[in-house]
Length: 231
Image (cartoon, rainbow, N blue to C red):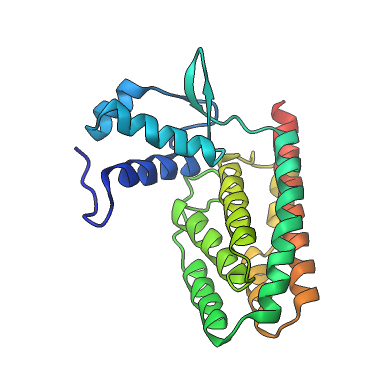
């Protein structure tokens, strides 16, 4: 059986491992998730595997078909636009509230998360801009830190779910030499994140939200180019 941390329950360990494989692209878009194969891989019961898959369905990373079982969600251009519209709407408000209400501890959390993001491992074998699974996790954590002081547990829960759901789009491979690849080359993502951190700490809510929305939609447009060319 795969080694697991003592602090994790068996179900949580399987969920965390499987979720990481989906977000990193090790298990591809639309790929079936066979119960028997997962039971053998993790040396767990059918009940554990089914519970994990149902929880991943709730996170919109997996879909369940009555006749075909479970499979990884197959992302589409339409689904991306729908997701980004909702994420931008809710996360912008959460960020604005956090900037208004956040204390020194909140500021420290942003600085720490940005430090980790800056030093995240880069892997040329990964799907999105050569970023690694570690970078994807650090990127999610950085944005979580920005909205952490919004003061609304329900809003924060929704924002975090939408943000994690959008991480599956980092699987999209951008063909070298394509217009999308040129758009990526023209951006300085690290500088954008650094500026976002400074705007938040400076309590410039309007500036931070504007940059977040610009960054998010610019990324979405690159992904849409690729998805539409695939489709």
